[in-house]
Amino acid sequence: MEKKETHYIKAGVLQDFSVRSFQASGLSQEHAGWISDTLVRSELRGIGSHGIVRLPFYCRRLLDKGSNPNPDVRIVAQKPSSILVDGDNGLGQIVSIKTMEMVIERARTQGIAFAGVRNSCHFGMTAYYPLLALKSGMIGLAGCNTATVMAPWGGGKSAIGNNPLAITVPTNKPYPLVLDMAMSVISGGKVRLEAVKGAKIPFGWILDEKGRPTDNPADMFPNGTLLPMGYKGFGMAIMIEILSGVLSRAATLGEIPLWFDKTATPTNLGHFFMAIDIGTFLEPDVFKESVGRLIDELKSSPPMEGSAGICMPGEIEYLKEKEYLKSGIPVSPEVLKTLNAFAEKVGIAPVC
Image (tube, rainbow, N blue to C red; front, side):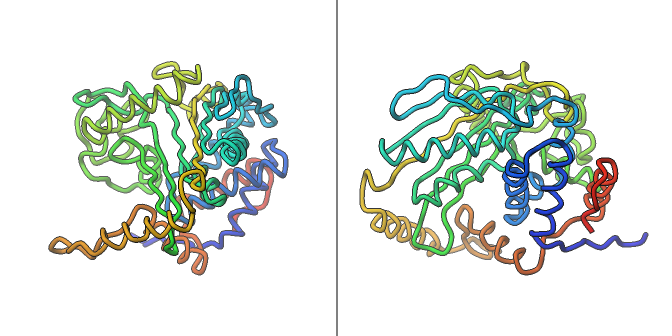
């Protein structure tokens, strides 16, 4: 069998293609730039499951009128340190960037700020939004509920979302601490990416439609399910469902359609965002030094046999970003073919 070579594409090239794709699908240049940056940043950090492979699905939602290309993202209830935001059925990235900017601004004066969001959609890489708080020297948090793609602990059918959570913390190291995790063993996007590649996956990631373990990622779609990270992952998913869905009066559990499947249907996803101004508690430099000492102590722990050493949350992604900015972003032949087929459909130039 002929081996297909991976393409290495510069971030700017993917950004340009993504902007053109979203503009052809109805977004303004500004909003096309915003959502494209989230996808390319995800690729740079090695999170290809939430990167450019998702572009055709977001564009299809715009073309099928399932998402509003020009949402009026507005505050519908507020107190000094908390806001409830209606996303007006916009794409999640547009809604979330606008909301996180409002949260950061309030945290500057209040010390801490929290936002609940309703009437939104899938927002891509969860860490993107806390990383915005990080740019302002703050601790950032974000979470989201999703369609029911994960089984409960002990269950064999999807009943809850894998509801991601991300937290970012500034440090005195070259990299910040960035925790970004779904509550399933693996993200649904990763399973979809492996299915596109025609690859096998480890047993223990998913169940097929009959509730049986499988190593074929295609068995996830349409009626298979992700498995939770044990009872702790299931418990965390419940709490994130409440914080992002119930608290914001967004859709929950079975009310949420699959955003990439029901592309003409609003999803009414819920999110939550938080920013903490470190200076309210202690000097930011003192905080960073303290976190740095914590990192040093943890990394000095003896490695287990066969381990290459101890990595902090976000450290590998930081190194990936440095590497891919130089080498280009790896894009599989299958993904590139999908992108170029979409380009032909909407009448724009291909990626390459």
